[in-house]
Amino acid sequence: MTYRTRFLAASVLWVAAVTAVLVVGALALRDRLPDPIASHWSFSGAPNDSMSLTGFLVFLLVGWLAVGVGALWYGARGWRLRRTRAATGAILAAAGVFVVGLSALTAWVNLDAVEWRQAGSLSWQVVPMLAAAGIAGRVGWFACNRGPGEEQDLASGSELALKAGERAVWLSSVSSQVLRVVGVVVLLVAAVTFIFQTSQVALAPLLAGAACLAISSARVQADERGVRVAFGPQRWPARRIRLAQIEGARVETRRALEVGGWGYRVLPSSTAIMMRSGECLVLRLTSGRDFYISVDHAERGAALINALITENSAL
Image (cartoon, rainbow, N blue to C red; front, top):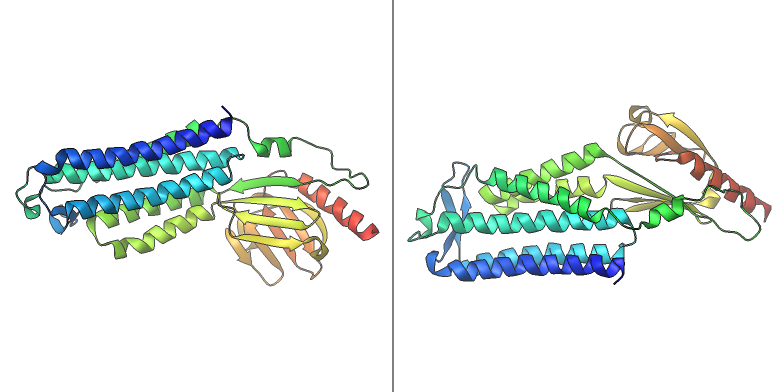
């Protein structure tokens, strides 16, 4: 069995196992639960809304399967990259524990209640459940962050001199721990808001948290077509600069505030993609602007880009 097969099989089994736990748990306790059940609580902990037992189960299953299938598609598409497998494992583990925990807490406070308004209080119990989901996500990351990685093979070569007809590709990446932490915190806020308020209120922090995580890392690729910067584990959105637009490349050490701050910054004389202060690949564009990209091993990328520009100009 290949590593890809083992990784995808384990992921599919996890999605199926969580789905089975949700269905079997609901069926096992349906005679002890009111219908409808309390499904929403105020910040004081008192139930303030209800949903049919079937509707609640369908809601959990649809949400879980949407996340699970999306993670499986993402993992299957980029399984060669170790960080993609790690991100898939983290998403599946955290989301699985969260949805099972939410189902268990809801069943627990509704258990043996005559009708939903008599359901128990739900407040502080959410905190350990969210903590368990966070720990599970971390465990999922470490469990899948192993095995062969395409990025290691691509980065292993140090020869940048190009022979006639030879083609080379340089890949490097950078991530922002600050954006990752902010994204996770905002998603936790969205989860708590969803439980104690309406889903509409939780939508804003949910989108904000997802956006932070989506742009918390970037991969830079240089080849004969130019330079491509792709954000996040999903490799989208992306910015491409054609080789014909680049006069030359160099390496500089910059603080984020020197080029406008963190993230994607546009100034009158420069553009920057800054995930952290430090080593930057600097592209001098034919328009006269400088394009700063904070990335590891920038000197290799600059050497290859300059070699490609020289080769291109000789044609």
